[in-house]
Length: 238
Image (tube, rainbow, N blue to C red; front, side, top):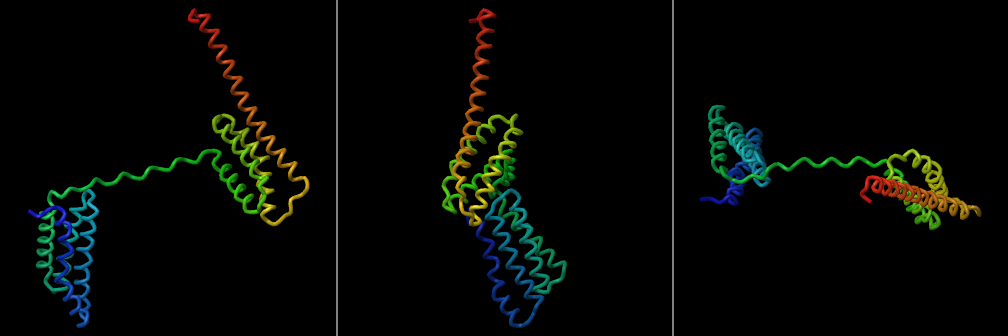
């Protein structure tokens, strides 16, 4: 019995008789017969690729491809009548179906997972990355701590989706200003004397906002703990 491995490699050998016929028709100028030979070579190669892929339904497609190849070679290459070509094609189709009966086929791969939708602050993070790259390119490292501080504020706002409007207001002042500074420096502007103080103010403001957000959460947790403790004692569980 022929193994499944060798059955996958039998199809390319069916084109060997067509190779000399292709050369003869080429030099003889028989264009129709040449087209039939070329199709008789190309279609079995396609069937071989289908069987190598091995997905569900590929064996049936390969059998239909081999049937079409035999019919076209007979009709165009051998100038057989349409009835004879169809009979030969049906024989090739049936023989290929029998040859590949029982060959294991892999299921079709699942469709690729849809990419996750962008987060509300992903654009701001991309802008911060561009600012950092610009700072390194123009040798102005004083921009980097400000970008890091703004990124830390974004981390805090991402944990609080209900305060995105406040995040947008913060970015509209701090990140927009930092971007404009980076763009001017990239265009060749010389840093003015007041730039270090402004950058320090931007960094301090971002760090202060981050600390305030954390303090608010800590205070809210403290109140929640106190309320829960009072309720436990009131219900007699404390």
